[in-house]
Image 1 (cartoon, helix red, strand yellow):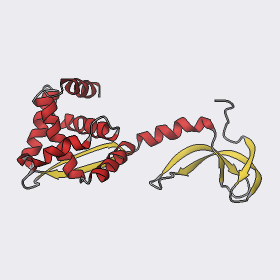
Image 2: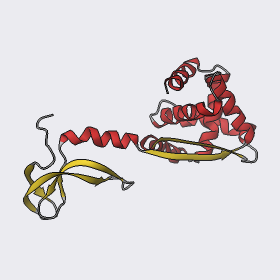
Image 3: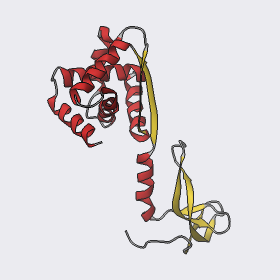
Image 4: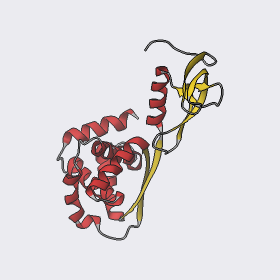
Length: 200
């Protein structure tokens, strides 16, 4: 990794605002994300002594930035028919019969979202579930959970590509989970989700 810097260390670098090589001081600062979806606090960076612009970010700060980005959570919520929520709760009971089903819900949903986001499950394989009568009916129940913002953004990109809404995708995920875990279509997934839930 090379040299490690401490807060207060001096250096030199090219400042894009001053358009010249300037003296810099390493300080803790807030970095805006390139996606413009927030910022990362407490990052050690070399700031221009003249204007305060970030001149450079040492390699030692990269793991901290990555850790903070991965830790950012977003809230996800959708309204679905009550009978479909019953399907989800039944799936969760299959995962861990000795734990409240509502406590397992986030693990089940996050598992499928993450696998879709990372191309381990194809959305086109799930679209068939949208023809099921179980997806129909009044949306009189709600599912709500938190998950990695970064993973969910990748999931949203997949939805756009397949022209699916978030609610449609969550309905399809629940029915895929039923196929995999209750109908024993994918016992490996049952083991993986069960291990994840038990380790939490």
